[in-house]
Image: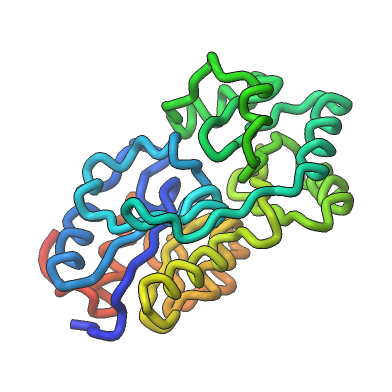
Length: 268
């Protein structure tokens, strides 16, 4: 067994959860159970806010903590490790652009979220493709905007993103789907979330291993002691990964854990 790695960090969509079945493959569940039995901790690293993490039932008992909203809110048990809000002037600017350019934007507060100017693209991606549950339609933007805003997810093109981000010097953007991007504070990305979690847990980064498939996983893949890109990952992520495993639907998590000696090799 590899005794160097003490903590595993997993993206959700396209890494733990298949875009095809919307479930965690049985081989992944088994692999994580074996890793836990070997004394390795399991953490989530996702762009999803906490209220939308509804797809991890089969491994819920294995999870030790979370990096959520791309590092804007991280916690272990009942302890908040870090929380980083977007400056209010940046929030107001993005909303003004959403109104002017007529694009949809998900507003994520510290307690609530809402979908501003919900459109068909949002429905296709969040509801049909990602099967996202947990969105309370009764919550308005007025309610969410009373809270610190942790993340904004505008449904815009890459060109629109470039233009928008040029006006947001205190923010950064991480795109993991062609239809939208996630905007957070400069202090919040998955890599910085990993550093905060490692500090809290008393781990060195060399003792961590991270898995991902999207552009918003680049920072954590670069920061972790071992960074693994799924076979279905975007090219930009594969370029910075230490290892490229097979896809989520081809036992990619299990294959990588065996490759690095986190779990023993045996028949699936």
